[in-house]
Image (tube, rainbow over all chains, first blue to last red; front, side, top):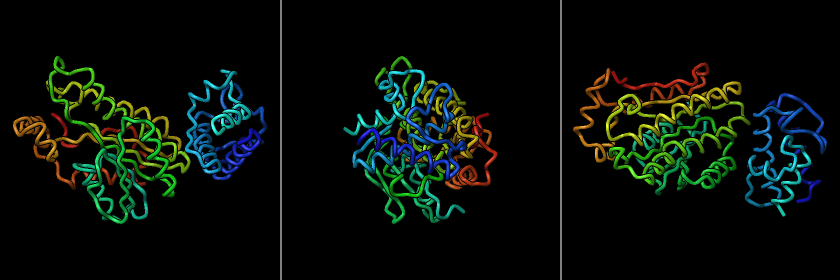
Length: 97
Length: 236
């Protein structure tokens, strides 16, 4: 899965979670959107629901059994303070390669 | 009462878990159960998986499979437990301690963690964990088991706070004496009689005693009840 495809899936998840009311705040997802950390658009529960939804969508799209574990994403993330959409997409690109 | 809902129960091969699975099935619910062994329940609406709750990946796979074959989970009952550590602390090996903690507490923790993610997506859920009268009794020879069940209580109270804003309640049932083959084999009648003598309500629990309590905590009607421990029989 390419970085762009992963970003697209994250964007789809954000839209569906906002539409269903699971995520309260509507926002336009950009690669530099901070999902977790200073100035994050999501609260701690919001990031959990987003990762759950993205995990399912990525697994379905790739046909692989994948799990998005925050600790593993944190280890992958060079910027330990903030997790951006681009970094999450990069992590998905890596684990689906 | 709960028709068309989906319930997940751990430890359904025997005892309380098996009894509760049957109870919910008779109410028209879909039940997903697990145990380390093969299924002991045959019913069109019962789905069994052999899961070792000490294994994080097995738990994650199981919950994902439920997610794919259901429309979400309404009720989770964490019942599975290992009651085999009836020995003084001085005789309890580290391996035995870890086994008890990882099944009774670790398994509950992992299943709650994975299922609560799905409940967050639905913004609704009822989580019921099982503790034990042993937490109140402090009987000799139960240190590992009692500690594991006390951990379940404290974990559930914290989880209740984490999930409260999302309409997910988390409560604990601490049963007193409930006769199962395992309990009678493991503890023996003398210990059970002694335990009964310590209770405010000095009789063993019936299936109905447990089912009615679970029904209430599993119901939408108990929306304001969370982080509570229901002591059935109540240790005096």
